[in-house]
Image 1 (cartoon, rainbow, N blue to C red):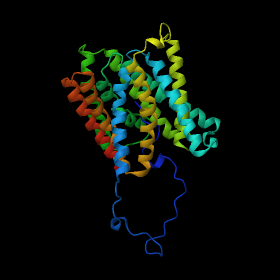
Image 2: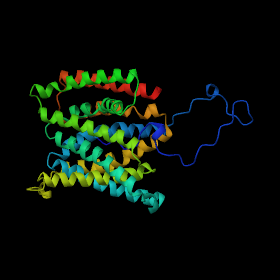
Image 3: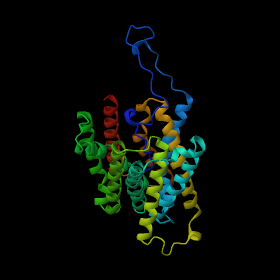
Image 4: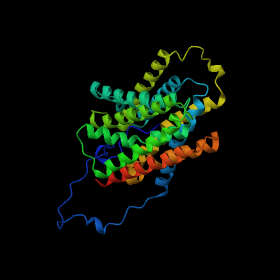
Length: 335
């Protein structure tokens, strides 16, 4: 669960460096040619490289989380991960754009903190907790239903996403029903399955809120405060749960430390930066494909590395959810 708080919708994405120049009317001197005559933009190697990073790295974070929570308490792991990542991103923003880029007013700071608590404490923290009992591939497939919850929340807020999106919701809910079978049958803990679904709902609430609340104009600055707020929240929850009692850093397995470092550097920084660049440099519909590629990558890695079983509910339910997400994403991009 490492998607950045950058909304891939161009209407609410990162601001351009300068306002667009006015377009002369058709036929006037200097008017642009009709779009039908314009050549399609070429997708270069850098775009494919960034897309590959987002596909593989974000898809692998569920596997990394599974290694982390083997010997590190879940909320302390999630909280420390995002505190470190937030501080590193803050240093990067200050280095690239100057310390002034980190200045925000109190209202926008509060909005970013709220979104961070929903995304990171609620979304990522609960996934960490759930993966102590739920296979990483199953967790990824359940989280893949985030677009389904987003459509439902937008509808509750008075929006009308369209018939295609609602069709995707119905299909996605059917897929989620199939994916809960392992929990209902006792193959995995039903509590863990419900935690992942709650994480997906909270992540969706954070996603919808980030588009409605007054946020910092710079998406990197917004992510700094989201990471720090969510990270501090995770540590606080971990302490309240007593995760520090009996925890000895010296007894943490090397694999858990390596996985935690991977999540900080690759999951929270490199992949985030790649995605933020991607939505400015490539067709949005192409960038959005991570939503249904990541769970496939996660399932494959969980099977190949951890030997997680590919049961029929996972294969069937996962396929249904991915199809639903494809329908929702394609419908939204046509609007």
